[in-house]
Image (cartoon, one colour):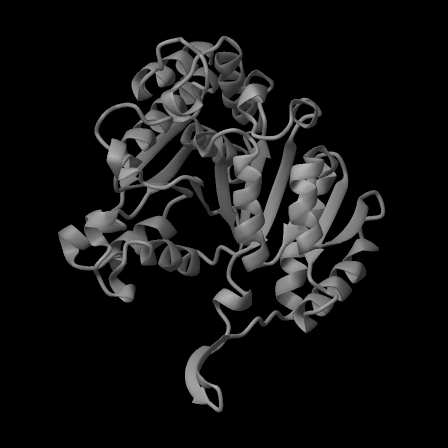
Length: 357
């Protein structure tokens, strides 16, 4: 079967790491009898330079007509002075909206070979970190009513947190379904002791839990969750939470694994069309130098195979290849730590992974 993939290479190191992922996908295709066809799509700063807007209509159309989308990274200081509606990051919001992607899935895994890179105490790190944070992506305070005014105490600003039962149900179901495929443990994060929106969140999640009796379910307040992630991250399996809380907690989870250069993500909706990207930025300071870590993007390709194409064996093959290379001591500069070994460049790390597939 042929799978059509839209490639949003973007800015900075985006083109380099997407090229690495394409090499890996092609090797997987040859090994397992699949074919992948690719269409380059302009979005982000490069689209602004070429067309004057961060997300041309043609780019949206191409993504919607594809089986899935892979994104490198967008943005950089070159475009920092542009007005908000013309910033490269608007391309991400536009794609998520057009593709109706409401769930961001971000794994945080600490590879055994990289325990020394974890900033937590060695005993905590050795217990292991293997969790997934599922963040609601299109609701909450980032999309609620906002504004400014002048009151008795002077100028003020406000942002509104708003969630409907249907929005909570659809993200909650993804959390329960994901837990069923893993260790059958789900933690829902809210602030129900203070926020009315969180109380509705908790009520809705409790109504859903009866449909999944095999899942060990628990509620946790967000401030406690932030503490528990550094105290005992091994207690978590699948975490589901709102847009803002997920934004913050997923970044915290990424840092306790040693490097953001290792972590992939997926943004999904109700169908199989998804957008897959590393969690790191465009890193313009190292763009074109051939030193970027391609692993997060390669693992994002594995997530695409698993979630959009239902190719679990193929996804496992990529993930096992990455783990094997790291176990052998292969390191890019961002995960070199105290090692005296020479760091591998982007193409060298990619080649090592290809050899393991």
